[in-house]
Image (cartoon, rainbow, N blue to C red; front, side, top):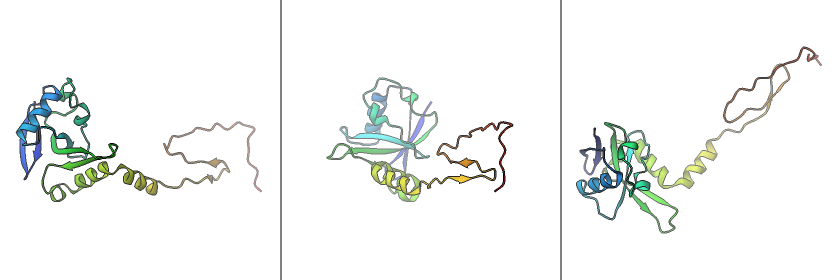
Length: 159
């Protein structure tokens, strides 16, 4: 039962993750030459943040969060002066070259306001339309299907 963590100049270390999160984080810090006061976290190769930093003093098992034989990249978590903004910085050098999508994901995580603005720009404008039967169709964001039963007395007359 292990996970692989990448950091530094493309270094990889295998860790046993069947331990408490507080112990796991402490051992990762010592092994990967991180500052003892630093707040660290992991991101998987799909761009999912593991949020170990939120549980850094937890006594629950790291195996509850991490996946067996998972491959992760070590990141440093820094709270900015305004204490609402959190900056995520890769501890793997040249992540832009080896994992460009992850570098972009870390930037999005560090700037959530920019992420929300981009989401608002990309969201399509929903318009009402009429089907051939003359029934008003209102598209929904969750794409749920609505069944409409027509009674025998309902018939549409052409104009």
